[in-house]
Each structure stands twice: as structure tokens, then as C-alpha cells.
Amino acid sequence: MAASSVLFDNHGRPLEYVRLAVTDRCNLRCFYCMPEEGIKYMPKQQLLTYEEMERLVGLMAGLGVRKVRLTGGEPFVRRDLVPFMARLADIPGIDDISLTTNGVLTAPYVPELARIGVKAVNLSLDTLDQERFARITRRDELPRVMDTFHALLAADIQVKINAVVMDGQNTQDIIPLAELTRDLPVEVRFIEEMPFNGGSHTATPATLPWHHRRIREHLEEHFGALVPLTGAAGATASEYAVAGHVGRIGIIAAYSRTFCGTCNRIRLTAEGGLKTCLYDQGVLDVRALLRGGSSDADIVAALTSAFKYRAANGFEAEQQRPLHQLSFESMSTIGG
Ligand SMILES: Nc1nc2c(ncn2[C@@H]2O[C@H](COP(=O)(O)OP(=O)(O)OP(=O)(O)O)[C@@H](O)[C@H]2O)c(=O)[nH]1
Ligand SMILES: C[S@@+](CC[C@H](N)C(=O)[O-])C[C@H]1O[C@@H](n2cnc3c(N)ncnc32)[C@H](O)[C@@H]1O
Ligand code: SF4
Ligand code: SF4
Image 1: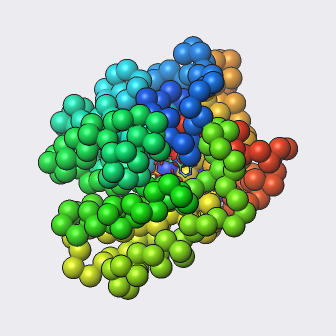
Image 2: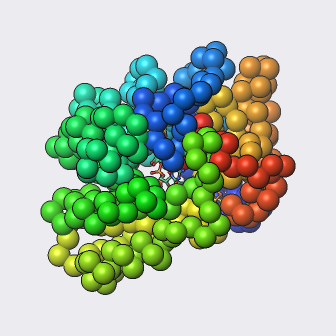
């Protein structure tokens, strides 16, 4: 189905972007995302199939969605990911397919990604120090992640590095990571830590130690004034240029939630739960509709109705949850 119209929510925000968590499994155990042990993965038959996701994306394209991001868990842990991406890219109306990956398994797939037209990849990398990498992710995989980074650059795929800033863990890495932008055409984005760590540690305190302003001040102490850039509509990152640098710096106020006013996205969890806000607890069981024999028209009506009842922002969505224990949810099931 071709994009025919744009759907606006009850706060006048358009639906343009869907994030698909293609799996809840992961080959890392990042401290801020998952506990080290005791993880109960979903049985495979509970995950949406690729065919189910293709059908949904086709229907969403009819509602105006044009951008799809694959995430997880680690997307490359699921088999046959790249052919699936190629089929999504062929859906009329979808003009932007990208993914967020930890980079451990990604390097060998980079030529294929380039071939199917993937223009940008977001690569998670919280430190350039091998020991701290192993401590944060609980796996010693930095060299393979760096292989992916270099393979993406060589293939001319635009890279955004995602680094979660964690008090007492990797704040010493902010400047070395930002230094990558001096000679490389990459964007390095620093992300406020959110509480979705699956019980790995206590939830982010109400006074987030490394919030957007502090990260910016820290960068400016080293590089001088950052020059704000005009970002794309609906973007999560505030983007900045640094004098003399080829690349850019971004800061994502994920916990402060300052960009909700232009939020243009919805999420599907790996088991087909629809989230109209990262902070809601899931507003629609799309898998039940798909497997219960619902018609395209019924599914479109359900998606439309869910989008028309969105929380105004992440704080309202959080308030509407019956339990406020966000830290028992893991980002690996939400997709970031
Ligand atoms: N609060 C909030 N944080 C978000 C949202 N989307 C992404 N983030 C945060 O930004 C991080 C990076 O997200 P990515 O998967 O790289 O996606 P993106 O920022 O939409 O990427 P681009 O499309 O390249 O701008 C996530 O891990 C979250 O911490 C959102 O809608 N709300
Ligand atoms: C959940 S991961 C899934 C994709 C892939 N495994 C990866 O790490 O890139 C998506 C993004 O969520 C971010 N993330 C995970 N837990 C987070 C948290 N507690 N706060 C902020 N961002 C988080 C990661 O840094 C990553 O960039
Ligand atoms: S952030 Fe990504 S790589 Fe790290 S544990 Fe979560 S899903 Fe896995
Ligand atoms: S917190 Fe919710 S409303 Fe705000 S930008 Fe994120 S998903 Fe959108």
C-alpha cells in the first residue's frame, strides 16, 4: 500500500517513523540495559515473524510511515535480517531503512547493507577502552565493534555512534569519543541514561547526574563553544558542530524528554506490542490481531485509534503506568 496520507495524533504530531525490535535476544549484557543473568527470553513462536512485520509495515506505510529502524535486542542475532530489510525497503512509501546495532556481528554484513541501499547505521559504543568496554557490556568484544565501525566508514554508510553516559562508568570516555569527530565524518551522540535496565541496577535517580546540560558543559570545557545545528524534524538529538571538526556531536535528552513535542514515532516490541511512547507499558497487542485473523482494515483502524490516544509526552505516559518500576523493564525488549 503506498503512502497516501499522514496520520496525526491527538497532539498534532505526525506518524512518520516505526521502530521494530526484531528480537529480545542479545550477545552483549550492557549494564544499563540488561541484567547479567536470569534473563527469560521469549519463546521464538511468540516473536513476530518477518512476514507479519512486513504486513504491518505495509499497512503503516499507508498511514504515512516512511522510516523504519530495526533494533532489538541485537538485530543481527536474528537470522536472515538483511534479506528482510531488503523486502522492507521495497515497500512503497518506505524511503528510509536503518538499524541500531552493537556491531559485534555486523561487519561481515556491511557490503550487503550497502548493496540494498542502507545509508545510515547507528552503532552503540560507550567507550574506546577495551577494559571498560568489557566491564560495561560484560563481554570482551571491542575489537569486533571497531571492525564494524571501520567497515561502515569504508562503505560510505553514515555512522552515528550512540554512547550512553553513565556516572562513575564512562564519563572519562566522553572526550575521547567526541575526538572521533575531529577527522571522521561521523556523529557521536551522548545519551542520558534511562531507567530501563531490566533490574540490572537501581533506577536512574531523580537527579540525573549526567544530563544534557552537564554533558554539553563538559564538552565545551574541552572543545570551546559547541555550535547548535538545525536538526531534522522529530529528531532525538540536539546536534552541534565543533570548530575544525569534520563530524558532529549530538546529545540525546532521553531521560529529560525535551523533544516529546515533535515525537513522530511508534514502536513494536519483538512480541508485537505497540508502544506509542517509549515510557508506556504497551497500548495494543498487535500480534493478537495478526494471528486472530483480523483484516487489514481492522488492523489499520486499531493502529489509528491507538495513535489518536497518545500521551502528550514521556512523563504523562510514565504516570499512566499502573506500576512505576521502569527499571524492571529492559531496553532490549523495547528497542531503545
Ligand atoms: N525519550 C526518548 N528517547 C529516545 C527516543 N528514541 C530514541 N531515544 C533514545 O535515543 C537512543 C538512540 O536511539 P536510536 O536507536 O539511535 O534512534 P534515533 O535516535 O531515532 O536515530 P536517528 O533516526 O538516527 O535519529 C535510544 O537508545 C534512546 O535512549 C524517544 O522517542 N524518546
Ligand atoms: C536497546 S539497544 C538495541 C540495539 C543494539 N543491541 C544496540 O545496542 O545498538 C538500542 C539503543 O538503546 C540504548 N540503550 C539501552 N539501554 C539504555 C538505557 N538504559 N538508557 C539509554 N539508552 C539505552 C543503547 O545504547 C542502544 O543505542
Ligand atoms: S544496549 Fe543493545 S547491545 Fe547492549 S545489552 Fe542492550 S540490546 Fe544488547
Ligand atoms: S518519551 Fe515518549 S513522547 Fe517523548 S519522544 Fe520519547 S517516545 Fe516520544
